[in-house]
Length: 67
Image 1 (cartoon, rainbow, N blue to C red):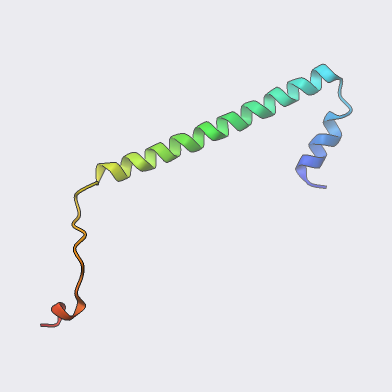
Image 2 (image 1 turned 90 degrees about the horizontal axis):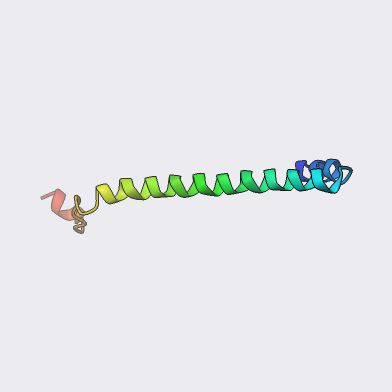
């Protein structure tokens, strides 16, 4: 039995109001996870933006190295 099934088995025996509180809690955890992922993505993009334009993307010719 996986975790989702165990949660379901536990919650289905609870009164409706209490099960609603569990749902609100789970939705809050999900929203927090999405927010943390977004902050991580924005931080990574900010790091990339900091270095934008600093490096030339010239083509590399291996034969010229040996001359």
